Amino acid sequence: MLIAKSDIYIALKKYFGFGKFKGLQEDVIESLLSGNHTFVIMPTGGGKSLCYQLPALMQEGTAIVVSPLIALMKNQVDAIRGISKEDGVAHVLNSSLNKTEVKQVKEDIVNGITKLLYVAPESLTKEENVEFLRSVKVSFMAIDEAHCISEWGHDFRPEYRNLRHIIGRIGDNIPIIGLTATATPKVQEDIIKNLGIGNATTFKASFNRPNLYYEVRPKTKDADADIIRFVKQNDGKSGIVYCLSRKRVEELAQVLQVNGVKAVPYHAGLDAKTRSSHQDKFLMEDVDVVVATIAFGMGIDKPDVRFVIHHDIPKSIESYYQETGRAGRDGGEGHCLAFYAYKDIEKLEKFMSGKPVAEQEIGQALLQEVVAFAETSISRRKFILHYFGEEFDTKTGEGGDMDDNVRYPKKQVEAKDEVKL
Ligand code: ADP
Ligand code: MG
Image (cartoon, rainbow, N blue to C red; front, side, top):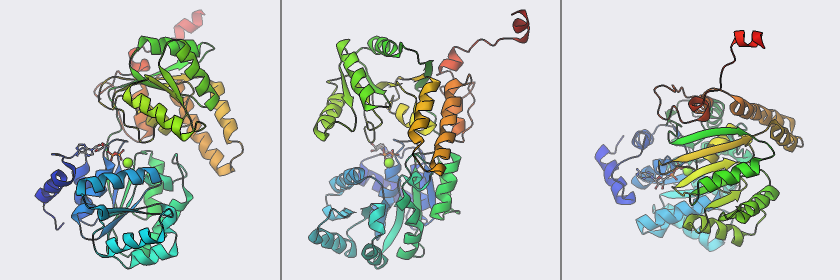
């Protein structure tokens, strides 16, 4: 590595105003600056962006950042421009730019001003873009949300599959950094294989969220009443209630309102204005509860969400982990309460029935894990972490008693009791 350790800290302070790194960031950055392929697995909120932004700002050339979400790219570009006070330092290259804008982007890259170029994977399939990027100095390639490359991930994007080939065309020895918050061993293998980074240095942070309390209750006819009671007991606290369907979202939001809870609905069927107004109300604490489909939550960083309720069980453990992960970001209390009925699993199976067979098989396997999780009598935290390839000891691990099964173990029926029955 040509860059001294102290320079990394100086840059951290200069560009981001932070005095120290979070978790594994420093090691990741050193690895990337040394020119290694690098693989980063960190939970959401772990600080993955900085792992490529900082080295990009410190190095010569342009780092190409592949990201699947245009909105998130724009956010990051605005943030980087804000800290560096030079608009050309970060750009997005996509189909929404007009000719003049594209020319400006290319000029800034050629002139060495642009340190970060965000591209959607589709834009990288365009021959003219590949030709252009071949001709400039690329510091490294960052593949954010790298799980999109895997059919086992929760957000498979076929265009991600072409990345390895395209990177090869852009340059021979470009270091690659892949980043994801999906920790299942299968997805990890897939990422490494498809990005062709078998020799990558891998950094995996723990996925344990010790301040979250996990609870699963059987879902009966009284689930709504249960939810109302729970929300009332947590009066004034911020919370999210996830439902599978838009219809259920609307109904439950109304039921809560009728019961005096400040609640709003959120789903993709609402127009953009209503959605953003409801989201703002939640962030500003004009309302306490958002009843939502999974359309709600991506990129929302409210630190003091005190509970996440699943009116319907999600379709995979990853989804459950992501959604419950929105609670207790500030390290304070976070109650994760899920309602479970096997008939909801059958409903989710039915949703998949129109899909290609391979997809259905994967979906089935993921669902079976959800069933196992909901029905387990072992520590839920241990179950989740095991699913993510992490060992957890409930006696010594942080948050070891923070779930219903550990705190209120189900009574074991002993053999001799059964004989008596
Ligand atoms: P991820 O992509 O892993 O979900 P982000 O990159 O969005 O996480 O970062 C999450 C939050 O952590 C951001 O608000 C970011 O500013 C903050 N953050 C990142 N690195 C540091 C650091 N070294 N010190 C303090 N805050 C940090
Ligand atoms: Mg991120």
